[in-house]
Length: 213
Image (cartoon, rainbow, N blue to C red):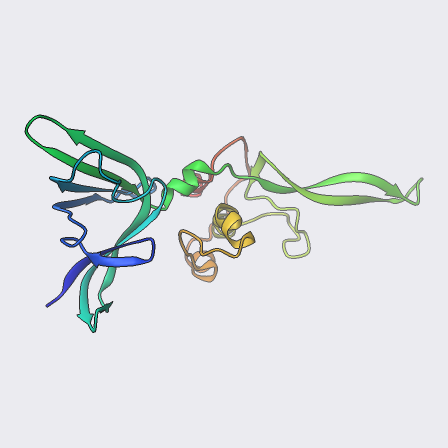
C-alpha cells in the first residue's frame, strides 16, 4: 500500500495524519505553481498547520517501512505563502496556499556583472584598472567575460544559467539547500540560441527568464 505524504519542518506524515482533507494543485509554465491545502474541522484559533514561508514537500506513492517512508516521487514543493483561518457558527477550518519555486524568481531582482574603471595604470597611454560589480542595468545576452566569450555575447542558454545562479545565490552563499536545482550543462546544450542584445532596467529573475524564450 502506498501513501501520499507531506513533509514540513523535517517531519513527514501522511496527508490524513496531518488532518488534511483536500489537496489540489495547478501547474503553470513560467509562472507560479500553486497548491492548496484544506483541513476541515481544525479550529481557526489553533496553531497554524504550517508556518508562514516554511517549505513544504508533498510526495506520492510512498511506502512505509519501520516507521519511515521510502520510494515514490515528489509531487509538489513550495513555500507557505497564504495561510487562511476560517470560522463560523457551523464549521471551522484551516487552509494554506503553497507557491512553487518560481516565487523566488519573481521576488529576486536580476543583476548583471559589469566592469567599473577606478584607476588608470601608466597614464598617459596606460590601461584601465577595473573592478567587477553587479547592477540592475542589464544587457541581456552580453557579458564582460571576454576571455571565455571573445565576441562578448552569451547564448540564451548561457544567459539562463547566469539568471538561475543569481536567483539561488543567497542560498549557496549561506551553504543552504537552494529551493530548486538546475543542470547548467543541459540548459546550455538544449536551449542555446544566438539572439540580439536586449537592454533592460530593473527586472526580476522571472522577467529575465521569460525574455530567453
